[in-house]
Length: 117
Length: 113
Image (cartoon, rainbow over all chains, first blue to last red; front, side):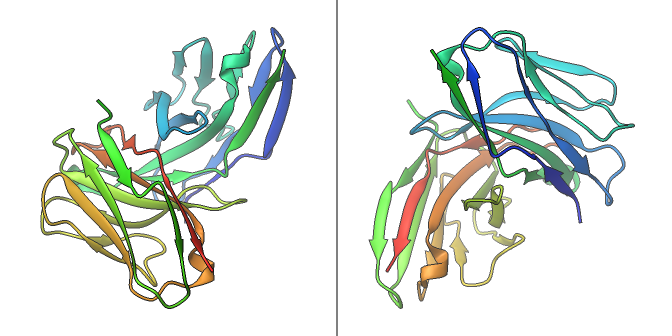
């Protein structure tokens, strides 16, 4: 079946330093999945950070960027300069469509980002 | 103001007991979902619903039932709770359409002793 891999369960970065969280996917049942990054701040539910539905395109939000690389089957999340308020859990996900009724999300394990002041 | 709410936020249950987790959404979305999150796993889909009166099995439905009595409410029911069901449970809602975003509740932490 389809799957999403995040290799780092936890990442610690100093404030103002750059960040990359790796995400690769396997989409055997669908050729072109939609790709997402969700973020979960402490005590809150997941919220959408960014999404990209077209291969080769880049999504961006709140200083974060991710590019849909179909050849490498990757969707890495990057930020040039992190802030303490970025500390959260980040989830990479892909969607499987079940027709016009909606989509089903497949999630990676999540990466806990801790930003040191 | 929160569009997806869950209750309770924390629950301790005994093995063999019945547990009901409730979810309410004010987004007027047709689709609703129940996931569980465990360490070392991403969120995994338990049940979902297309609308009032419908429930569908997700990837890990065993040991769970779901109920969608109205557009706004979606419940997850553990008839005979087991310690392996100790987890954090998330509810989400989404409109129909292949690019629809899912909106999540804050989660319920369930401990089964």
